[in-house]
Amino acid sequence: MALGAGDCERLHDGLIAQPVNTASALAYVAVGAWLTARGLRAGPDGRPGPDRPSVAFGLAVAAAGIGSVDYHGPGSPAARLLHDGSLYLVVGFVAATEATRLARRPPAGARRPAWAPARRAPAGGAACWWAGRTASPWCRPDSLLQPHAAWHLLGAATLAAWAHAVLGYAGVASSASPRRR
Image (cartoon, rainbow, N blue to C red; front, side, top):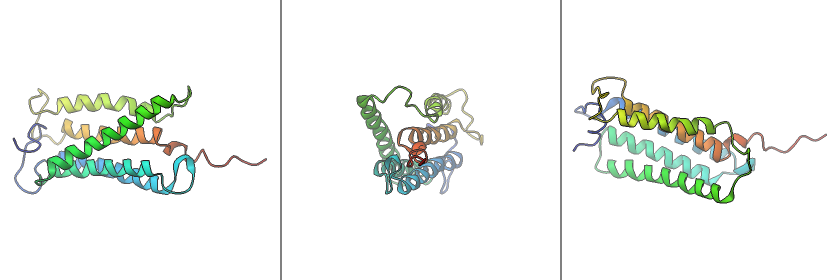
């Protein structure tokens, strides 16, 4: 089976096999670049210096985007490895971070507002992924509105919201030294 054949959008000849899914995968690249830049600017808890876990996560998200662009676009020989391998890195990072957080048991009320979209978007993303399968009754292979593309956009938004809530981006400005009286 050709790469992307199960993702509803009709496969085209030429450099970009699935233009809508390829373009939407750039959301992961954009979010990964944003997360990496934020991680390089501010260390954990607002301290100066890079926040290495944040930079690593941003690079993993960007790699997932590059892999997805390759998978839905040119489909190089490495496309499946880039696509799947980088997604495993991202999921593994999130799982390890959440397991560590659960083991430390953060104090009650420690949730940040960014958690709301990070909790809600995956359900919509999963529905779009399912609706975007080729065998789905909602599959319209020639439409510019591709559910799999929405899966990419919601996935990228979820990762941005999760990183904002968990990796300290939301607290960088607020954790500066307190005002002197």
